[in-house]
Image 1: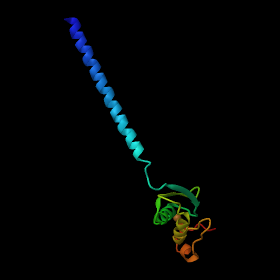
Image 2 (image 1 turned 180 degrees about the vertical axis):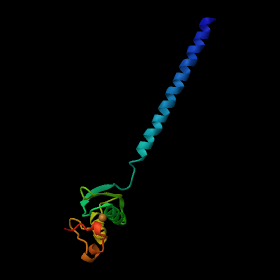
Image 3 (image 1 turned 135 degrees about the vertical axis):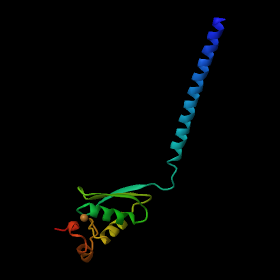
Image 4 (image 1 turned 45 degrees about the horizontal axis):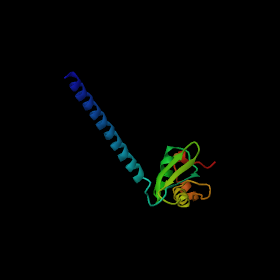
Length: 130
Ligand SMILES: [Cu+2]
């Protein structure tokens, strides 16, 4: 009688262990399927960075807003210490377009300079030209 109860207990124990195990496998399988679904994008993102002259937090906001106004720019982040603008594009690089937009907003880049009258209209704290 005791053996029978023990056997039942053990069988039940194994069953719940098995159930837990298969449940775990299922969720892992689901995760794998999600991971597989992600890289199935039509276009490949590209990244680039470009030097943009500026001084302060206002410059950062102005530069990033100008960069984000260009179609195909996913993210734009300007570092006030390195003066580098880091860009992520949803497809191919639009760095030249971004430089044009940034220069139009008053900030010089490596290859495209802002018009003097646009530059002169910047707030005093943003005058980066020496
Ligand atoms: Cu500024």
